[in-house]
Image (cartoon, rainbow, N blue to C red; front, top):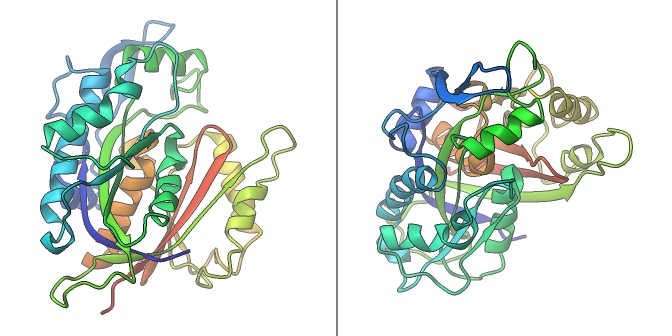
Length: 334
């Protein structure tokens, strides 16, 4: 696997209008879950962490577009001009298909987003519908494109009647009658990357380096052994121990158990006395398909601004399905 240089980042979330504001308000613990217009089966208002700068009348597809546009504009404006090309490869992580979704999410979002920021798309631009682990899958794809910059990101919002109804039916909304649920959130985040071996002018400085993208599939039919994460944490390229870990754990007990089992089996990489583990959805709510990109943005700023623990961070994501991923990001010490 070739290492990837991170050149620029962008984000839009309930905690901030850009990447830096998002990361710093996350660090300060400024989450603000509020009631919504949506109600569960018992008639109780569903709470969510949502962006105050987007009207509550904007839902579903339009809301995802409103989240993604400023984040994409930020990453493009901050990208070194020396890396720009006539056409851009844009890879986008989107939520898994859900009942009652707007068909434009699958057919139009990528193109409408590019049009909104006046971006000419390379034919290799694409979307994946893998949820939280989708971003890592796209990083792996970017490694195959050779000496070229790639914009990779994710966007998701649960602020949609069909999406909330699906969660409510599955007892996945956190409430007094469903203690095993989670708080829905929303976000968009993007990164500009290219292979680290690419020659660039000395004045162009990378923000960080992605040294490892490891993905796998967890067997969901057998007993809950956490075999996939156990294997990913044993990759010899990881530091011993990992100083800082950012996860997308949203409080659902089966996911907490899976990660806990894997961590306990790997004390060399996850040292209970030295490794700092932070579960980002505690302050954002679950941001779904935006998880991987958002965690990488926070990790990058944590390493560059100094609020991260140590000189590297591992980013751990798990989709609702079998996909699992681990990304290792190292500080740029050049």
